[in-house]
Image (cartoon, rainbow, N blue to C red):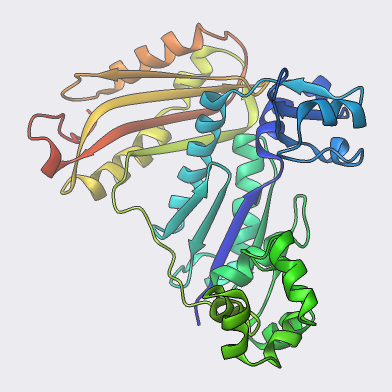
Length: 352
């Protein structure tokens, strides 16, 4: 039996903006277009209490919530946060299928972490995302992708739900059909007209008739009504980077304190490089500092044949000057390229 985690960040774009501006924490916040035909990309749960929703025209959202704080989309910022989250996922499994910047499936069937407990691992990953990225995430744990996705919505925000193999039958029978991915408002209305509102109704319906009534999706719907889903988690076969990060229990007050704490980071980084040296070259190296106000900076250098400790120190010093504030997290990484794609890139050399 497989163990699948579906991890979905809560109000991702809005959460990243609130993370970077704590004054917004208890206010209705939305991210999206502000004029003309602009629409809401996402909004926090405070805004949702007023009826604001994703894909809603901005003018409608402002009419429902006149005090709504509308912020422009900053994709670069969200991609950085997304990459940080993906890095956390990859620490526990290579079987990661990213659905969007803020959503992914993880196959942890073979994981030995937490004695093989997928629910404890999901909880740990959510805590890591909050502590290291500054946003909350919800998770669903189940034997397949469909059930894991349904489960991840149950205890939102900042929660998780587990569907054990022996509880599938009871869980699925009363599940409304609208909770099945692919069942939108139009299809739901059509199913209701056939007398189908819950999964148990589809279980008792002729599958051939269902296919005739709604098309080929009818067979998928029939399978889902029993909680069945044989789709694999499709991991990315090519890594784009490797990195390590460390969040400190106490802020590092100055650059000297940061430098004192990079050696364990370097040792961990070396271990990861060694595991990849047969398949990848490094085309650039980077250091990251996240300051105590959650702002962060990344400094990257290419054309470095061997990355030694002195170069790392120099990069951290340069990065520190951009914020000159206490640091809560330090990171070190490399941008990768498969060996077969380039014969002239930088070797993954050991640090000196």
